[in-house]
Amino acid sequence: MSLPYTSTILITGGTTGIGYETALHLARLQPTTEIIISSRNPGKNNDAAGTINKALSQSNVTFLPLDLSSKADIRRFCTSYSSSNPPRAPIKALIPNAGIQLQANETKLSVDGIELSFAITHVGHALLFYLLRPYLAPDARIVITSSGVHDVTKGWPLPVLPFSSGKEVAYATEKGGGLQRYSTSKLCNVLWTYALDRRIQDTATAGGKRWTVTAMCPGLMPGTAIMRDAPAPVRALNSTVGLYMIPLMRKMMKKENVHSPKESGMALAQLAVGDEFAGVSGKYLEGTREIKSSDDSYMRDKQDDLWNWTAEFVAENAAEAASFKSLS
Image (cartoon, rainbow, N blue to C red; front, side, top):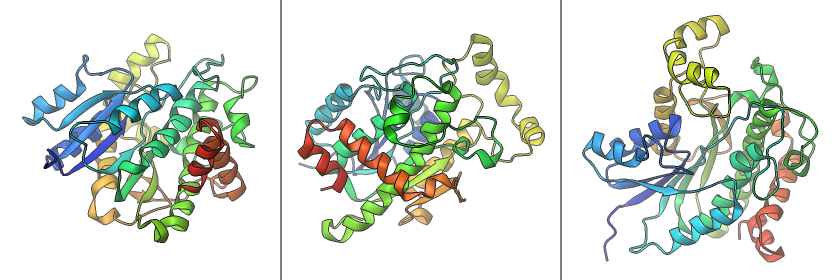
């Protein structure tokens, strides 16, 4: 039986903002690839996939619901994915893009009892990767949306909570506000990228896999849903007026890395499928330009702590945790 598509690309948080723009660009570039966008809700007036398909006069964008804050729902998603009939084509690019930026100082927990931004931005994506490994193409690319706010030396006004362990980030209920936890979760994206890259290199020859993993900073982006938890006036400013102020923001902040979701979405799509990024792994990029990440992100003891804690937390038993840790 021939498959309806030659490959698959999965984008989390794909119904709004940079995820939506990435999906739109990839669907246009790759009409024979199924573009799966996932989110807790369909977005774009309840049909982001339909909106893209209609705009392109195509039908290769599919919405699948996924709640990254819930281990149970991630497992439901992957079980459903594995039983697709006909089977879906191999995943050529996995784009863990979803995230949440809580504004209040109060602590919000996921259904599994860990800090919510960390659960969605890092932990849920890690479990998704572990469970979808059998469906990744041999040369699949994992492109993780991180952020420059993880590096205090870059001048962003969001402080990062010092990373001492994955467990402390998960259960950080007594210190730090929502913005700090968002920044720290983005640091975890980079730590995990480097940890995964090292393990891919260690297992590539034996398994015949040529997977790559990169972390990308899309820059400051007015017009996304990342600030959905902010007060209504702030949300309105971010989603409407902010888009028209990008040139002024670049000038006032003395930063070129301020972009619209469309600009950053095109960059993310390029990392996912562009020929010039084939084989590029273990790198941190600002858009499509490789740059240095924070000093903390290069510390292997922190990478390994996060890797091991994450695998143990998301696994159902010791055998599964061992499989996740070793990529076996």
